[in-house]
Image (cartoon, rainbow, N blue to C red):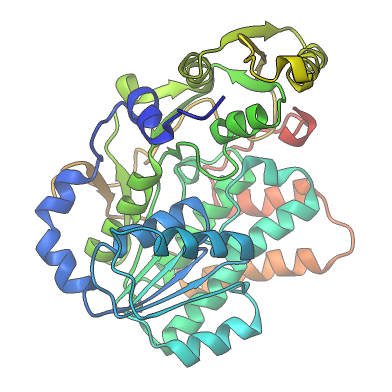
Length: 416
């Protein structure tokens, strides 16, 4: 069914609506500066096996670095990254290139960092990115540990061996957050900003990455390959960038930004924000399928089972289905924001330095003492055997006054 399907072209035509990268003109404008700041440098990428991290690596390997160390807990993802890079002809892979399946919060990470460093460029993409990660108190603690507390350990390590450029990825959901994931990334932003007078730190808020690992659109393709039904929310509109654009955006931010800068893509709400259901229907049409719209999850599962059984019969092996079951539903899960925004009203923007990127210049800078107070409260709470989601939310709200948490009592793991 997917034999002749070109995902890259589908994204360009039906998701981003751009035939060339959003960053093309900015890379042309700053090519010489980027070359001077990247060529001959030693680079570490944390979380490099994920979609954004891997495309950051692909963007930086268009230049000539002398060393690249990649760390990620996804061992299989690292294996595929290496195979992908070494099977391509467009990347300048340095002789000194190594990957490690290591958690950047572990003691062994500090050992390998000191052994291979110091690094000129360090980029951190290790993060919990899903709203579904606030399903219960255990997943929330793990998310805050990863997105915030471990980031502090990394910053303290970098103080010993300061890089020329440090980047830590954020999210559009950090602007006026309504979920714990967004609040954790907003707290991460405030954490790194408190170090921005000591380290050259930059970050970026940006849109959904089309067909990224774990995303709903990629899930459509996975479900189809497994002969399973589709499930899609109605009326949830999002900005999208391609995987290539996500890596390029982060590279531009990490190298060309000033310490304390938060980058975001210049996208138009009317033209560039599209609903997931539109992507689902366009994808079905691209695959030569009609939508078989179902009223319940159970109906969708039963119809998919019938299609699967039909296709598995030897006499029908060469026959392709004409339609595919899809269940559309209204979103009613905790922390689900119906729209996206990259900045708030009180943030000062620079819309002149880059062609298709904006920069937030006055992000709030807390003192280290304030950050310590926040961290101490979270760490003391997490020492308890029994805590509630509400307790975590209340601590976050006390330090993030624009955190308007949406609680419905339902999570995405309860849906198909």
